[in-house]
Image: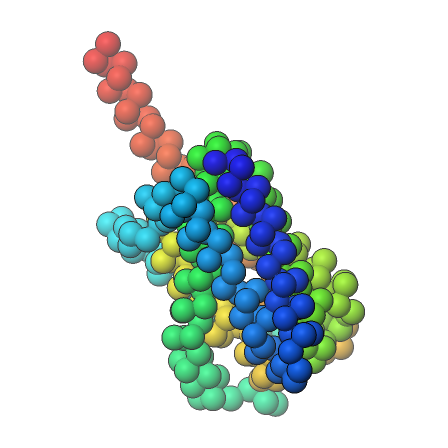
Length: 285
């Protein structure tokens, strides 16, 4: 299994650069929606399918079961995390006059959100089948402690984004999020992804299903990203580093806090399950 995971990591980190090469080889590829970007996005799932089908990894731990019993609250939580945190950030921006709301149109935003749900659902099925359904699942079997699980998956997930940050993402999109160059944006992006991975990992550990994560990731891409990239919210110069809805310091801290709260909840649940079992075992003896 370790050999497969090493192969997975190497191929996944190279596939984006294959996409970059394809785009440079083909004339007039549209930036942000190119064949190379498609290769970058789909290749990790293709690699996991090959490893599961032909390299002995099997299919049982993909997390495809809904596992709704006892987990409906975590599905709801997954759907609400990004809207709630984004609302808090927007409120902070409003209170301190750090956000310009002149282009804010709720009806348009709702329309953009709803229209983007299906494509984001499909796109994030690809991602979550890889990062939670494969990499997280396999690392759990190696019995890594929580910190190493967060950092390992988040680090590979973040490093997979490097071609996206350095090549595929447009300059306008970068400056809309943070007024920095591509290399700084890449570093901020990787750190942000590692911090986000805490809450993704915890919901996966509690539900043993990728579907709450597909829904959560879908919500982020369909709601949070357009708010900034489409110009519905304009953050005051110099305040982006604090309250950017995707990569601000306050924003990232709040997502990390959510992840740690979920971890505390999971640990309490595990303690309750272990306690009665231990008591029963002692009583039987």
